[in-house]
Figure 1 (cartoon, rainbow, N blue to C red):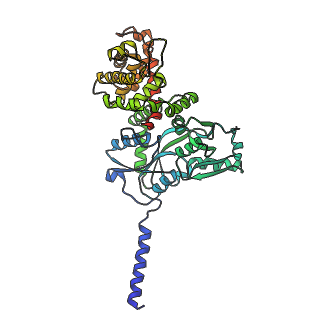
Figure 2 (tube, one colour):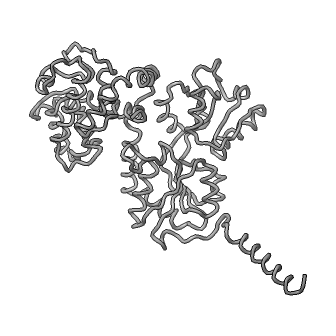
Figure 3 (cartoon, rainbow, N blue to C red):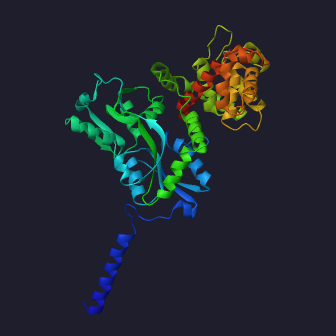
Length: 451
């Protein structure tokens, strides 16, 4: 090989070496700040407690809502990137591929060494979750050594188990490159016995997986929040300041109301029955709910959730007050809608959907969704007149009559003579529609995947 060839090869190797050193950024790699570009690059996970698409195909989720509100307050746009695991989130943030991780991350001292800690938005505990048929269930952390635990890789759960292993050297666990929700599903399906998950993730997912048993808390309360990449101290400080502001606290309250407030204490019997009836009963009525959706525009899964709350999908259901059928129609409502047999599920579902659609239509058009739907559901339960009273009382108390969360607070006051005596329609069992709407929302989350 002549001198010219050697020189060319040497230059080529230098070029390759240079590229390999510069193309993949490492920890603390420089990236333009959103303060400079007006674009906030956010990393998240596809999960019910972070980011997902709702039944309308719109982005939703606690992390999505908070990040969007924060960015709007700064005049920034948001570019979202979803990955599958916490390990991928941390790797991508460390490599400088995003500004912000909004992925349900626990604030840990170890993570503080690699990233800029952002604001806190939730408190959780880490919980040991097993299949309820595991016998015997462990009674304390000292008994974890007889289990082989599977947890999400590079997670706060793995860090906690490492701490416990210092005290209990026989404790064994496997780190998996899969999401916490997927691991919960594997436990529910008896493909492994136990895992560890944050309490908010467990709360949401036990409704879909009623065989999960919370065995014990493995930590005291911990903080969940955001992390920013190295070099982004300014945006991290902005985010902390915004979250502590009145606007940030309002968004936090709205997040909790939208995603968590309606979920009641876990009821194993009720949720196990719902999941069983989704398989056994729902298929026989599904086409009727879909037909009613076509006719009214109301989502079929919503109508199915109403029907489940009313009758548990029993077309022959009857109550002592005279309501009947799968949608539990009163005799007057059924007659006004041309129903000849309230026990006929086809007639009942169609009429119930038409009645709910009419209640929805008669509310002011400027009430936003989903508030308008929740107010219509409350009217289906307690009557339109009492909901009108509750909205009037909300105005008098300086609350928003178009906000379900505000009307939800006011409705129980309809049992108090100090309030109902001045209203047009008087006393009502105001707690009833509150629980009614909450249960329908919770059932809807479970049923939605069947449509």
